Length: 174
Image (cartoon, rainbow, N blue to C red; front, side, top):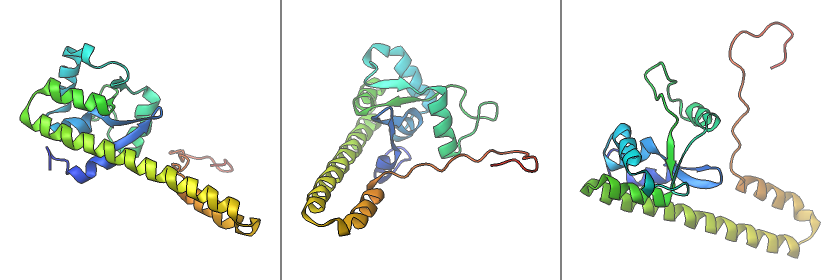
């Protein structure tokens, strides 16, 4: 365990944003055993070490999607007042050098391993899709329903549509 995040749960804290696998600043801060404020201070002080392919700030829309996903509080209620920064694998390693503590170095090794594991899982997923294509070509259209079902299971789950909260007048559609 590093900071307060078990190594096994680091993989679950890797998100896909703008087609890039990233980790939130608050998750990395927790892994490195520092506060999010301290982590972001060091990033600001060492801005040249974090180009756009290492770290970027979420848009308001991306932040609101993550906020609703993780049920974090809104500003004004004790939560964040700025949009989160997210770090790629390279940015997470650069953080260890900026934070420069033994726990940050140890945590960076675990973070890199989590990113590598995610990359391996994606490669296996691609291999399975390729094998499925080969089987599909080999067999009749009778099995089309089976192959379509398997492909549907391989797709990442889509978030359910947001239901509008508040008063709904009679006869209005949800």
